[in-house]
Amino acid sequence: MTFEPVFETQQRPLLVAGPCSAESEAQVLEVAKALKTVGIHLFRAGIWKPRTRPNSFEGVGYEGLGWLKRVREEVQLPVTTEVAKGKHVDAVLEHGIDVLWLGARTTVNPFSVQEIADALQGVDVPVMVKNPLNADIQLWIGAIERIYKAGVRRIAAVHRGFYKYGEKRYRNIPYWQIPIELKRQFPDLQLICDHSHICGIPVLLQQTAQRALDLNYDGLMTEVHPNPPAALSDSRQQITPVEYDQMVRSLVVRAPGTEDSLFWRELDHIRRQIDEIDDEVFQLFSERMKLAEQIGIHKRNRNISIYQPERWSRIRERILSKGTSLNLAKEFLSAVIDAVHQESIQHQGEVMNRPMDPGHKASSGELKSVKSENSPK
Ligand code: PEP
Ligand code: MN
Image 1 (tube, protein in one colour):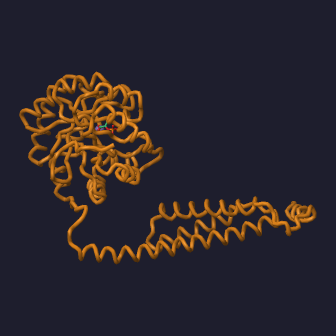
Image 2 (cartoon, rainbow, N blue to C red):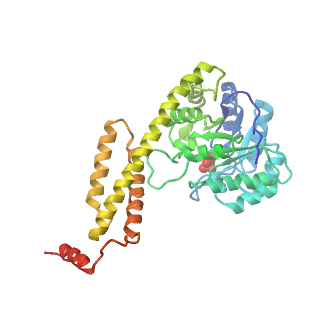
Image 3 (cartoon, rainbow, N blue to C red):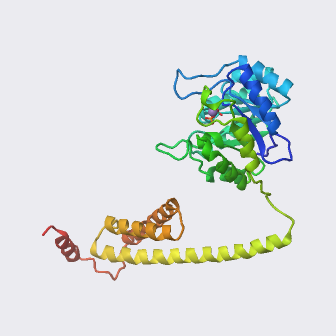
């Protein structure tokens, strides 16, 4: 698949902002005018809201499309809204909405995505596809493919984070590696960070937006409301136009590259050192696995099980305390030591279950002595 930008602008980041939901004509126009002065590129507002529970505000529906039309014509801002059904697509196209987006609860469902793709067949309108609720990159790619197959080329991916049970820090955990992998596979696909739905609260918005820009995202999507505490949906995460303006001004936009050869030489010098360290680290891992194999042989000879819980707890504790004093994050240490342990078990398992050397005397007497050693005294 090769894509075209949803929005032609030399400016980075592409700024998409507006309320979670269009609530009234006055609210929409007020916030759109304020955002126009901040310099956004695309105004967002939800008309049909896919709410987790019934009896919440489910959007103003078709009436809101007229309000967005006024934003286009009177405030002179292109507009975008969420579509979740074929009927929504027909309605937004009739009202001249500039860009459509598929929400996280739609991307997750191939039937809904296909219905939208069918309605888009032969229509040249840009579409933004949010990531699915669950951390499944294939589902995200699949939704993009369905829209692409309808003939749409101006597609962007919106990263809004992933639902994780028990997650406290973020409303939706970012798992940056997923959008990074998407961008690796599709380098010309524009990537937009919806930091409002990732963060769930305003205090994290700035740092999350900066992280996205540092990762070379093309744009940001932010929920902005004239009076966030009174918002009918997502009131906790919305910010005022003034707060939005401050946030945007504080961001540092970094260039993806430079022509300056001195910069690249210095970078190369550091990168070579990194490569050397990586070589050493993996050489050491390989030696560690050889030791694990020796342990495997040792345990096999006495018919002792691979997994020794106390030893494993001690290794984990030791690495976590040593590693944190070396300024390494607990999550990183945990992930690394868990992976090393898995690999170790794999190596031990292989040697344990390898057919015995012809020279090895595995007599029943040997097994008996192990049994009697292990039997309760
Ligand atoms: C929204 O943008 O308001 C929305 C409902 O987002 P998501 O689909 O990411 O939950
Ligand atoms: Mn929202």
